[in-house]
Length: 477
Image (tube, rainbow, N blue to C red; front, top):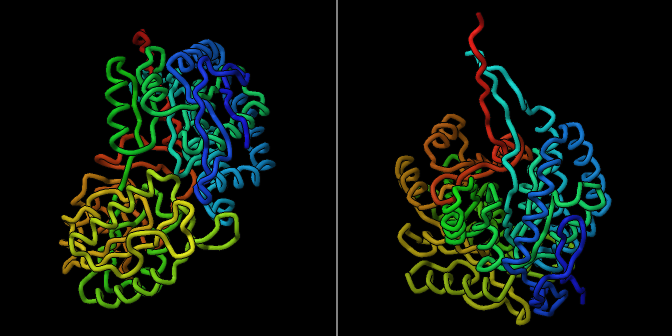
């Protein structure tokens, strides 16, 4: 078992002020694979002090200097790529193939996207009225990242900090801290100055709240549940920090009768089940035009029953476990709610798959005859659970799609390009995927309503970490 109880502060691995052990469990075996320490407010303060001191000089570095460091980091990440993929498989339970092809790949893609954006960023420009506009690093940033796509969110937050001349303290999820510590090793090897990046493990109630409340933190960037995002915002309010949030989702997937039904429904279900359903932008509400509803139900029944869970250390397209016992219980409660509320179970259901009594495995589950008032249609399940809802008209589909507190992503399946654009324009979501269009590195990621505020990735992601200053000169004589 790995001993990972140190924190990375001011360019060194240091002992916590007060040791508070937490075992990191492999979700497939339920056995400990590492021990970390949960940080306190005092640990956070030590890290913030280091970041504040480093900001004085790092904020004055040139774009060229920062680009050179980011290029080094990219090369190191590529060299240690397989190590990152294996780490995520061990602590998250992402199957080996998925971890290598998706989970680890985001560390390359987002970093390259930010490098490309930084090369095109205008830090100084002349306004049409003659004033000068400057873009400057906002300061010391507190970063809190989740467990479901761990290095994805680390890259989306840490890299723009490093790129813009800010400094930071990262608190990763206590369920998946090992990939963050590996990323800290890479940053150290790349040669970023001491104090620019700091890492303190801990839980949200103590370390996370201490970070959000800290008077010397200029900005908080948080990804996680809407409930926790509200808490971060409240904690940050007393010091009027900038707060950016990437929160939950209940993404609608509108399937019109003119779509390639077999291909698009199958792909949509597999997308919903990807990462064991633990994705904030997963297409978890499938809205189906009534004329093809029965056909879609039969396809969904077949695809759902063919979906398999399996050992995450093996290659393949199977589904791994959920991250923790807590998450397993939450998903089970919502599956049971779907049954109790009268939804028709097409595949899966409560309990563990046969042969997987150990580990936090769940059955890939699909409900039909769902209406938008049911808990499984309203609440973010965060497991491999799909709800199918019928509709009659385009207008009704849009109304159901937008009838949610969330607004992260939406999906449209149609053979009519004009309809695709017309519907996309009316969906209250930060991202709309048409006929399987993927999210691409460098494009902004984020949502409307209770899915958060701010955007991550590419140029928009850099701008979140920049302040705008206007310089007014006297009128020419």
